[in-house]
Length: 163
Image 1 (tube, rainbow, N blue to C red):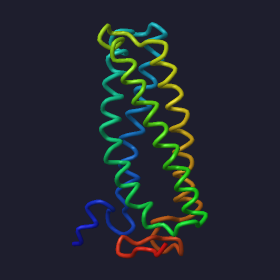
Image 2: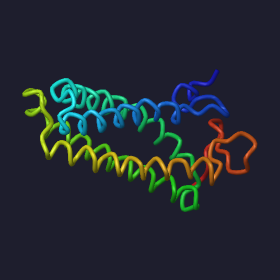
Image 3: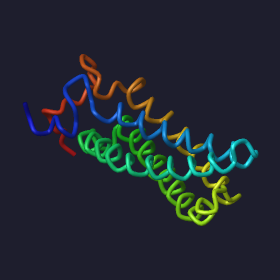
Image 4: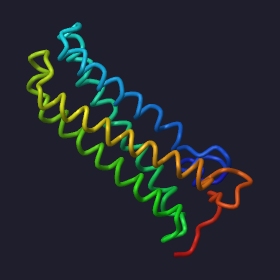
């Protein structure tokens, strides 16, 4: 077993995509909880859930982004696949920044068991950017075939492309 498999996953089983499920799921839950809190549905409980879900998502973002970055490094720079992956990475970093701002700005409201209007707006904007980034990430795999075994576009964890 190669050490790189701990960061990249096995051939045909990349590590980045399943980690995105945790991160996107937590951000999606935070968005729903923020909306429900502002709508008055279980407002105190949903406000606590919103902020805690943001913290969980931000923590999982670190691992998800690291594995995605390691995959991105292996792409042929300047190619259509690389451009799409770079847009994906940019969108996801922007979304993470907006969610971080929501957590920081919203912490005071969280302590008061509510979601501030600014926290809600940042969370919804973050989710919109996250959805765009996810769509671009899907294109990296389903359009360009990145890390798909048997695809001519597959990037093996055993190989590094020259830049």
